[in-house]
Length: 328
Image (tube, rainbow, N blue to C red; front, side, top):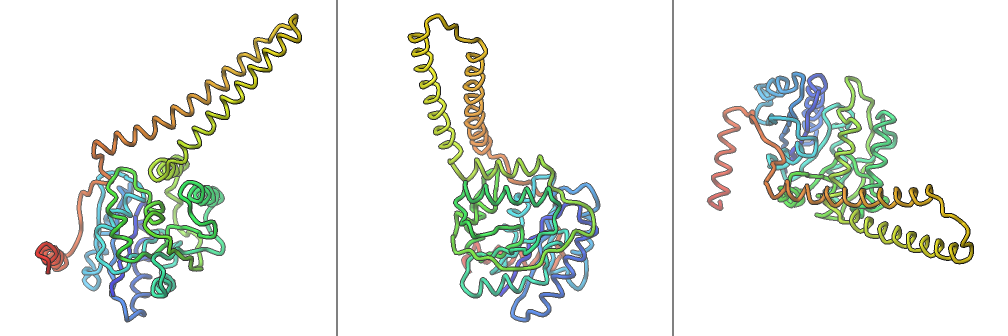
């Protein structure tokens, strides 16, 4: 059985060699498995791609490591999709490039799949992220639970293992806004958690800014759920009900207290409230329509500038592709 390790890389020139070395040490103790490592450089501004080339050129491990270089920054989930499509393993394990996800505990994820699970997510007793990242993870969990019907007891993370047929279903998604958690949840509900440790970051800082987190949540909102539109309908109906009730109250006041002059401020408050609600609903609908437009125009998930392999590995890939096309 072969295990494919998929690692999106961004600003990880210092941490990536340690992560790869830990994978190699771990898999040397799991004799039942072969493995490959796929490193995807998401247009990192540092020398991450040079580090990947160096790792791919290691004579002892070159056949096991593949490097992919993007033309621009497409985001972590697009990088994962590229790695999943490149992978050939019976099992795929996705993890981070910063060393915080313990590669030496990959055996726990593999054991969970051997026991019948389709997907196994790492669950951390205590996350060593910053307060901002922990808050972002909490919001991501709640969003996935509400929008994607994620089971409440299931904890999702960037460190997970999936069987081949789940990965094959995930990579059928070719639209512009991939959201890996949504793809997993639509493929199977046979998902388990595995308790692993979480490490503190030793070098650099997280590549997730507030802007990137908001963009990620918008993918979850609009790419895999119509609940926001249903919420818009409910809110619009509730607002209309409030407006109707308020209109009745105004009429009654005019009948009961004809000398009372209705205030300009109350009228403006109502106009601002309903105007704001209308703009929110139109913006939400526009987000769906815009993403549909971009998808129809075949905007790519990612664009690959270069794939780095040694010559022998490249020849093996060609032979494998030829056998698949010929049905052998």
